[in-house]
Image 1: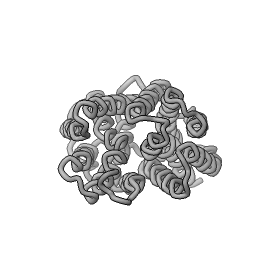
Image 2: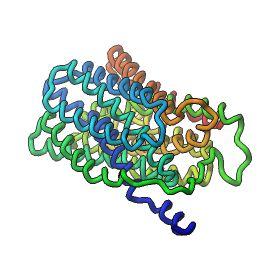
Image 3: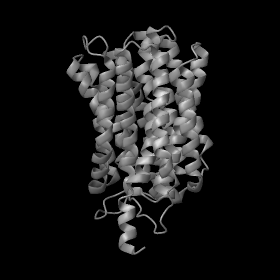
Image 4: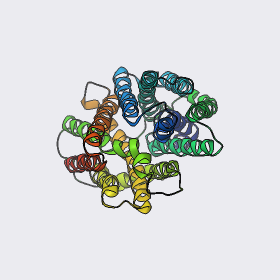
Length: 389
């Protein structure tokens, strides 16, 4: 293969990129975030209360942390197998929620689903960005999360319309995920080209050198990413709950779909901004906009404000991943651990703490205001730290 044709093949590697995006659509969009849409339905069906649902959410985030730690030493060459196991495990967990109705059984399954979600995030990133070397396709990869959120949310909406309860809805999501996996798995057999992919930089190519050594930048990125995990998770967990009284006859699940719709194009937007402005300025902008989206429902309880909040948070949280993960890849050589796995782990820590803080504040104030203000504050601190990259 000539150099020109090799470059063309690598730049237009839609098959592998779509396969990796499908892994994230199943592991994250379905296996992880569909719970946000089904949480109120499971409460209505009597399988969960708001409190036990918070335990299930926290178990999922704890599982996410455990999963990230389990693959902290994973090598890119092992990523394909991890993608397959993570996807299969996520599908089984969704099917299990269709038949298990005990509170602690649900909490346990959501914990296992969190492990599978982390495996899918790390494995898909390792496989596409490092093993295959298609770093330019990072936006398409992470857009899979938003696609999964939209698709699962609309399946839930249609299922509710025809009278399905939460058990049947989990079965539908499991079946849909299985079909998507069967379509995606053949492309996972693709082999990398020998030519190395260009590395992402932490700054604009024409700009001045970054501040600090690579190891200092790695530490800052880890801290920024952990705060970002705490910052978005209150909206991502409780959005259908704190909007349900403001929408009249509109099903809150459609607002959750708006969250996903915002996520899909945002990957390409934030990647483009990162290429033009560098990680420092694009990440600052991303986290600042995300903070505005998180705090907006505190100041306005109208349907328009909730829709805008969903769009802004949905349109930035995967963008954070799209900017930060390739940036982590850029400084991975400076540390002795798997940078992508550690980034995923600290994100999980933030997500464990978020619902626990939100539940404690809700119990004492009967309001989500304090939780949203705390989350927005974490994002503002994260944005300020980004200025030092």
